[in-house]
Image 1 (cartoon, one colour):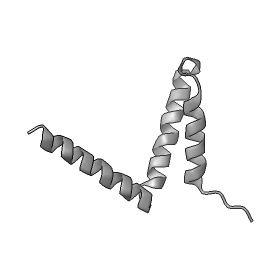
Image 2: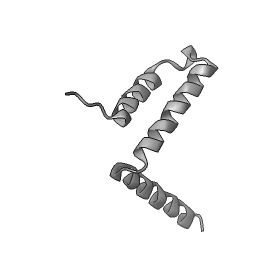
Image 3: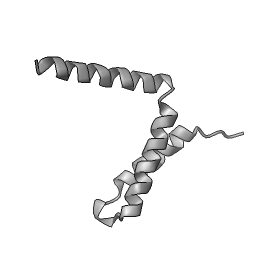
Length: 69
């Protein structure tokens, strides 16, 4: 039996959609891409990978905030 992780499938779809030329997109196409990315974020957020990304972004933001003082 073949199982497909929905987050992996959405990641592939995002990469394929973002490789297309920007001029060929219309407003609805851009909205669909944003929706797909949001769903991908919701699926990845509770995973260990999502927590790792959150930690890295939080440290980066804290470093930028501290360097501006």
